[in-house]
Amino acid sequence: MNPQNVQTASLVEKRISTRPKARLFGLLALIWFGILIVCSIPFWGPDWRTNLTGKFADAIWLFILLVLPGPVFAALALNFFFTETPVRITELHPNPNYNNERK
View 1 (cartoon, helix red, strand yellow):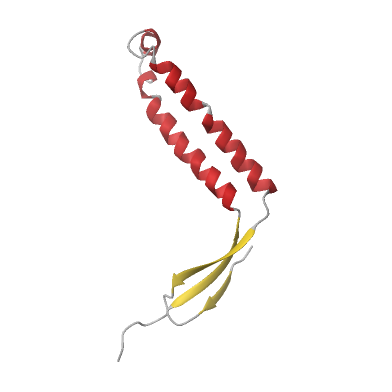
View 2 (cartoon, one colour; view 1 turned 90 degrees about the vertical axis):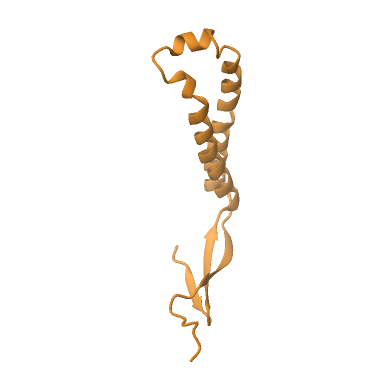
């Protein structure tokens, strides 16, 4: 899909098609993936089995609860990507060819 560009004095209108729910859940899935990476740090070392029974024994349930929303966000993003009707929006961007200086 090629966006249509309409130039006005100092701004350029760019009309695009987007799927807002798919973008939202895709962003949430990426952010949640970062949270999972940070939460899994205690299990990276060679003594990860002792961490499960030692100092992080109670935290393992928190980690399991944090894992659950990630695949849900990813599934919703894929679902909305294929089923949501695209919405046309207009974005305004600065015109790179416009000279703002007065002579």
